[in-house]
Amino acid sequence: TSARTPMVAGNWKMNFDHLEATAFVQRFAKNLRSRHFDFSRCEVALFPSFTSLRSVQVLVESEKLRIKYGAQTVSVTTQGAFTGDVSADMIAHLGCSYVIVGHSERRKYHPEDDANIVDQVRAVLAAGMQPILCVGESLEERRKGIELDFAVGQVHDVTRDLSDEEAAKLIIAYEPVWAIGTGMVATPQSAQDAAQAFREHLRATFNEHVAQAVRVLYGGSVSSKNAVELITEPDVDGFLIGGAALDVDELTRVCTLT
Ligand code: PEP
Image (tube, rainbow, N blue to C red; front, side, top):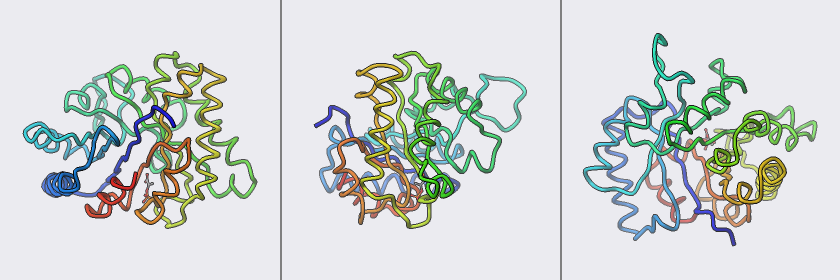
C-alpha cells in the first residue's frame, strides 16, 4: 500500500457560469456530507473557469468546505502587458491549491508546447501551488506501440530541469488523447503500465522519495462504471475527470468509489 492520498479532480473545462458553479459546489458538498465522505482518505478538487473561481472561493471559505479547487491553465509570466492572461499569483490569491497544466485541449487549441508548459509548471510551483501535469499519447503513437515512450518522454521534457524538491510536488495525469471524452477508457493494465513507467522515470531522474511522492492520476472517460478497477491498480492514485464531473451525482459516486 502506498502513502499517497488518492485524488479525484473534476475538470469542468468551459462549462458552468459562476452561479451554476456555486450551485454545483453546494449540492456536491451536501452529497458528500450525507455519505460521510472522508476527505482525509481521498482529496477532491474542482477546476472551474477563471470567472467562477472567486465565487467558489467565497462559498468554500464561508462554509468551511474541504473541497479544493484550482485553475485550468496559467500564464507563464508574472505580470504586465499580456492581455487576457491570468498570473499564478492571481490564482493562488483565490485560494487555489492546484493548476492543470498542459491539458491536451490546451496543447491543441493554443500555442502551448513543452517549453511553455515547463514555464507554467515553474510559475505554479513558485506561487506555492501544485501543477497537475497532463501527458498522454494520441492514437497514432498507440498504433505504433510507442505510447509509453511518448508519455514518459513528455514527462521527461517538462520535468528535466526541476529540483528534487520541486519534482516531489508534481501531480501527473496520464490522459491518452484518444480516451478523452470518447467513452473509450484505457484498460486498468495500460493505466498501471504508464503510471509505473512514470514512477520508474522519476526514480531514475530524481530519487526514490520523488518517485513515491508524486501522484499519478488517470484521465479519459472515467465514470462510476470503471473507477473501481482503475483505482485498484497500485500506481494509479486517482482521476482527472471531464464529462463525469459535470454531473454532481455521478461525480459523487466516483469520489465514494475512489
Ligand atoms: C479530461 O478532459 O481531462 C478528461 C479526462 O475528460 P473525460 O473524462 O470527459 O474523458
